[in-house]
Image 1 (cartoon, rainbow, N blue to C red):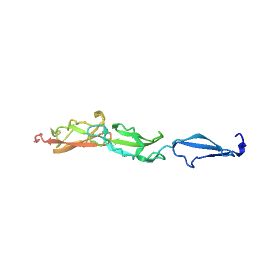
Image 2: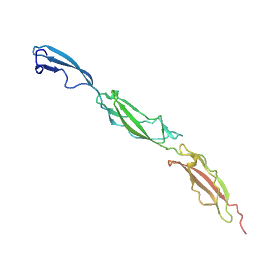
Image 3: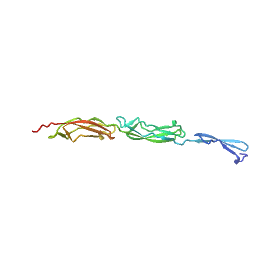
Length: 220
């Protein structure tokens, strides 16, 4: 100042105690001993650099495969709850990278919460698709009728044939096909249970009738 010593100038401003987000103009005032005043402006910018807080991520989900397929669609993922220091909850942008079709096994879904300032927070959800569909038996082993072994009232080494089956996930060559046929079939009809099991432990069964007839004449 032309008259007032620098140390005696009165310098004040109208800055608030708390600055809101955005730009605030602060007016600085310099007054000399004669009451002459000069002002200048200062811009104070407050930016939101705090990421949203995820209160609860979507819970892990386990679902079965779609009928006839080795994958799952239309999986209900649930939702994420989150809060933010500046953006109201309804305005938070919550997205995920979930595929339209989930393969068998476990897929990690990344959820992203973004506030109005572009700050991001993520969390992970596990989606597990299990094969809960039984194999399909396209043809059971055909019923068999055989004669008794020579001099015996039973039959051994009976050719049972085979079962054909398919599965939604397991390759045909990898299906485990077994039966409970005895080594020796008694005279009469025996029910043989065939079991087809896939890689996930799902089981389908079918029945085959094995009839042993006595076709040997008496011996005098």
